[in-house]
Image (cartoon, rainbow, N blue to C red; front, side, top):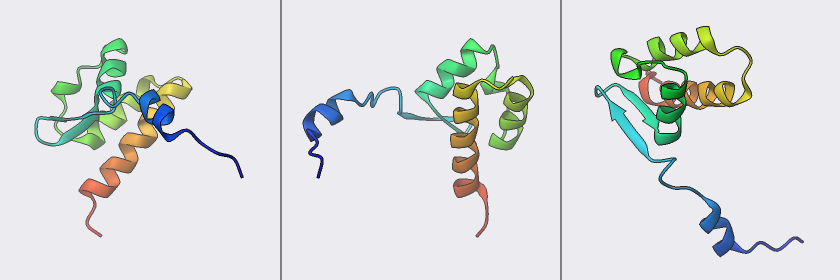
Length: 85
């Protein structure tokens, strides 16, 4: 069985980049996602819902793995937070 050094694993996690931000009360993004959207020049503050922001990002995704990962995370978060189950 492989042993892990928990302390070094925890030290490798960038908690600040994964911190959650609430935008306009409806959009929930991590700092990493905010930075990526700024790089893509997408004005995330102009959107009123996660769904509309996700649709805008999909239009510029161009098969970029980092953007695809971000879209998956955002879609999952949108489903769990905004879908009546």
